[in-house]
Amino acid sequence: MSTNTITKTWFITGASKGFGREWTEAALERGDRVAAVSRSAGQSDCAFDDLVEKHGDAILPIQLDVTDRDAVFGAVQHAVDHFGALDVIVNNAGYGLFGMVEEVSAQQARDQVDVNLFGPLWVTQAVLPHLRARGSGHIIQVSSIAGVFSLPGLGLYHASKFGLEGFTASLAAEVRDFGIKVTLVEPAGYATDWAGPSAVHADRSATYDDFRAGMARPAGKRGDPQATREAILTVVDADEPPLRIFFGRGPLEVITKEYGARIDEWQRWDDVSRAAFGA
Image 1 (cartoon, helix red, strand yellow):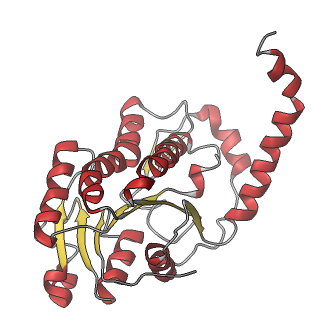
Image 2 (image 1 turned 180 degrees about the vertical axis):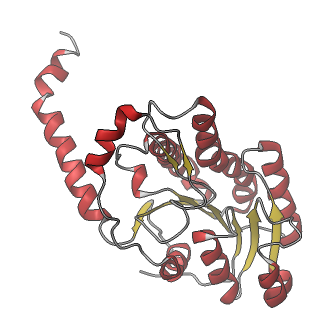
């Protein structure tokens, strides 16, 4: 695997914690520049104060709500004006919504899709003219193993990530001839606060108490977010990065089994499928 290690300028959403924080630090520590985007960037106790003190002008904190399309376009332009160009775009901002499909409120559903799906869409639309004009760039969409298979209790989270996977696969084909690379990073379970302080929980209905009790199991070992630093740098430095890559142990085995089961079912019902086409 050949790599390209020329200094890069990053635009990272959700940069104040989790993967975003780890990748912001990884980029800065090797001499890259980062527009660090977060809802909290403009607060008096900004999450990036220590990084600004350490790295100076190499980091540009930007306060942004990724659901505000106009603000997203303004933030991207601000980063371009400040640094001159952008090379790596990381759509990392997102959170988990926990609840059975029936339990999720209308507002919770809309908020989940606004952040996890429309947020990356707005950022992608905002950066494309800049990347296209330069004939280069790399868009990283932080999806999840939850973007390629589903579990009960996370239906709307899955919907947002499946949607992200769908438009990103189309995007990759649309922009390839402009020299723009696209990658979906699909992490397994990591020790971030995704299932903790960042999570939203729907009000529980007693209807599903027995089902919930049946699906409860001890939490498995979580990956170390810091261990993803070298992995993300390897992806962005690759001459030919993947469209999709898992981060973590276990996803490949899970998805191999899941997709094998899907193909088996499609094959069992193929006669009905063909008959539905007509004469």
